[in-house]
Image (cartoon, rainbow, N blue to C red; front, top):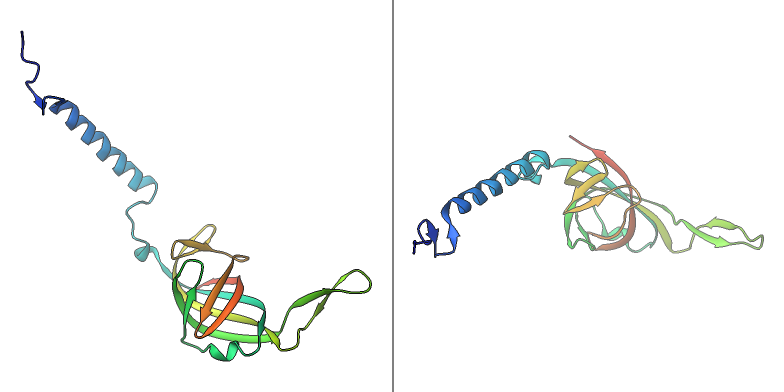
Length: 162
């Protein structure tokens, strides 16, 4: 009877098969890193961007709690996304059904619309800007805290600063 355990690890795995499997894994990792961009740090690809958020109606006592330089926290991704570089307010944007069965734009007393521009570091993609693993693009809705103000907003505009 011949010894079948020669060249085996723990009597079960052939050393040559193990080397071949390791080479195949290395080739797959190499190809994936080249074609999928895996391995390139997001920090290296990140650019400075301005993201303008628009809130249609917030109580008018909220915006005085937001100032230039305040940190902006996104409630959905649960992390800071940048700093406030601009705050503008205007009449609230609300709609109500009129007697003619049509929607009419009205301003709600005690409320205002708000544009908050945030400077952030993000990765620019074909579909928007990635901040904290989430793609932000015009129309994206979220909840942000800017300073001590809480806002229900949509992304209004994106601008690459660099």
